[in-house]
Image (cartoon, rainbow, N blue to C red; front, side, top):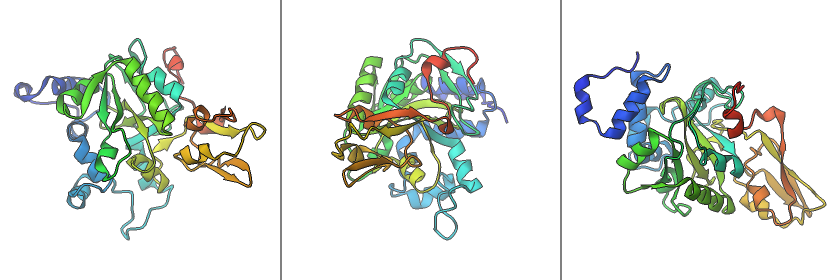
Length: 318
């Protein structure tokens, strides 16, 4: 069912909600059910994520209603098979694309609108794989819902970047105590600081959020619900298209990259640092933080296409 709402409801909506509804009406395949889901997710983000991660006190009662992580465990309370249809179905609706620092920085410094839909080779999910950036210089930094849900979160909290409209205005209007508008230059500085802390950058997509990209999150494996779900077999994160490579002649085996790697893909034994390529998603945090220049990112065709802004701005995007 297409998105249709009684006209009288407009008088009760905030301006950002009206903008979200207007955008929903023009989004192909977006239904009234999607609109309700999207509104609840954006309006009650902290409750939604708190329940999803199981940290909120209401998780026991609300999680079954929303079915948010209904595929995370089987009926017996054991993890479902990693490649089961249930797990794939959930990841298709809500997922992130790992992006190195340079790519993330370009996403927050785009100087014109972008509309590229159905990026199958870049975003390897059956749903939520559009990039539609309207007013890309409208950026809001939001206190991370995953970190906010934890008892002892990583700091700082204000590290989630909501990019473009109608999402930036919605976050600012509905979460004034947790959000503030920033410039693209300030967004780049947040990305750089988080990279130095060893936190990975993810461009997030969600079906209920107009089937498209809406935020860049800077994630640590101890707080991020998506990373934890991914580690438990729900494939919520797509590789950047690169994999880490270590030059053994330059490597001092100091172990700094091992401690920073959020995907536990690096290991130092007997003075040699090795890469578990299956675990590595090509975030590039090791590259920027290696004092010896031993870590680099190597393009891996098996990992899909990188999310490159320059390519998105050209015609004929795959």
